[in-house]
Length: 333
Image (cartoon, rainbow, N blue to C red):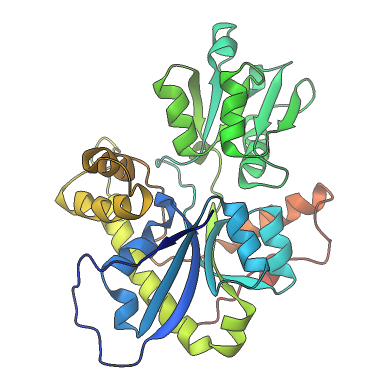
C-alpha cells in the first residue's frame, strides 16, 4: 500500500519566486539514503526553482522500479539492480544524479555472520569453506557487493552455497533462523541483528567496495519533453546533496562522524520523512545514525557502473551490447 507524502516546508532559507509551480511526481522509499531529496524539499529548494513536489513513499526499491517502468512517476530514487540497469539501458529512464554510495571510512551495507557460525570460528568470508551465504536477490547491489568482497579477499566461491532470500528482511531472517551463516545486508537490517546479538559484524562493505548504492532516475518523458524542468529539479537536488554532505559526513581526528547542531538539525528533517511514527528522540537518533556517504555534488560514479555492467554480463544477466553510457544522462546545465 502506497503512502502519500506531503513535502512539508520545515525551514525556508530563501523566498521562492512568484512563478507558476511545475508539478513533478517523485517515487521514493522511506530511507535515510534519500536524505538529499528530503533536505531539499524541506528547505524549499524545489519551490525556489518553481517546482511543486508530489512525493509517494513505496514499500521497497523494487516497487519504486515498477512505478518507473509503468510510467507513473517523473522522478525516482532507487537502488541499482539488474532491473534498473536493464530498464535504463532500454531508455525507459536514465540515471541523472547519484544517491548514496560506499566510501572507505564510512558505514553503509554490511557483511554479518550468524551467532552460531561465529561460535564455530567463522570470522570472515574466506573461512566459510562450507555453509550458506545469503543475499536479497539476483543482480542486486548486495549480490554485486558479495562478488566485490570475494574478489578483494581472494575467497573462492567453491565450497559454500549462495542463496537468494527475496528481500533484505528475508535475508536477515535467514540469519536469525539459522538458515544462513553469512549475509550481505543494508545498514538498518544489519544493525538490528547486531544489537540483539543474533549476528556479528564481519566488515563494512565500504572496506572492499566503492559501489554506487542507488541513483536519481528521470523518466524518458521528463528527459525529452520537460528537460528544463529536469534541470531545475537537479539544481535543487544538488543543493540538498551539498547540505547532506556538509551536515553528516565530517570526521573527527579519530575518523568518527561528527554529531553537532548542524547534523542534528538535518537529522530532524530526515526523521520526519523516514520515521514519521517514531518517538521524536528515537527517530532523530536513527536518522542520524543511518546516513550513508554521498558525493557533495551528487555525481554518478560511471567507473563503478562500468564494473557492474561487466559483472552482469559475465554472469549472463545482461546483453553484451550494454555499457555504462546507456544507463545515464549527465548532459545537464
